[in-house]
Length: 441
Image (tube, rainbow, N blue to C red):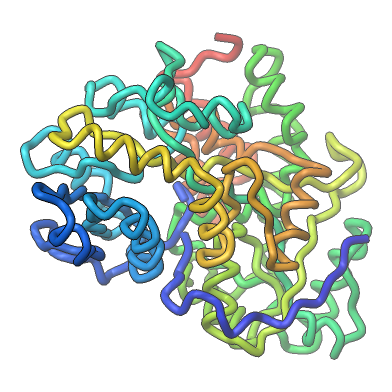
């Protein structure tokens, strides 16, 4: 059993509010025309023609930390300054698309992974990096899959974070009620029953934000439907989303609604975060990106993590942690400062940057050689390494329209509202994906 009680660090990033295809939107984005980011006084003094790189991101919550991180790059490269600009998560894709096709776009930008990367690749908006960033050859192939062009297989980004999905729990609440991490599905249900009887919301879930619904579904039931084995069967064409194991996982999701907040479809994602950090709810099924926010929101919060054991008769007999590549740093094909941008991209693939991502942003940097000093991060990473699974609908089913996560998000809401049963949600996913995906092809 993996169990470690960790006192949340007061040195956590105060501005981190982490949310993917899987993080929560933020409302404090700057005007797209405004200048932002750190600048280097040394640049103007030491260089005849200092170059300012515009770097864009969807992570408004990390803006201050990134500016501090880029100060380190500027100290080593006094002729280059970084203007870091962050935009609202839900508006970023359109802002970036417009910027990359116009004359006022970024030199380097955070770009999505897997299927959501492809429109930029197909539009010729990004430059391939295979020969530009040699260090990419040392990255894990599974992580690089999130940065590849689907047709040409070229790499169009430097991966910046890996996310894992599991259950966080409040160790003080567990201790108060004599609870321990579950080893079986029966243990997990007993924990929920005990908490519910004590007047504590067992699971902090906000289904009002559809993007969060498939994350929770995978956190609770990925082992039940088969994880990577089910992914492979889908790829081979030996099954589809009407598979009984997948339908059963959706039914389990529906059955667990009784342990979620009342009117869960009316509860927002940020409401669920507050329920958990305030101690009103005992568990939170979500991504590793939550850690910094939880720690900064309540420095006294004691946290633990676990993988949910599967019910009897599941496709797998052991729990798993779904995971995915969160995004990449891409090079604009229209950049007027390509040489300087390439210098930055090589630094973004270096262990110095990767270690700061791990230490300051509390993110799993995919840069080889990075270590995780935060004990709870190390535990989540160990759990993922022991029993990994794909965050299926994000990894494989965002290459067409509609995307898999959207279908499960809307379908999960309809499930909780009583508008669809489990088989109906599975059919909704299968029928929607059939518009562009054929099993086995």
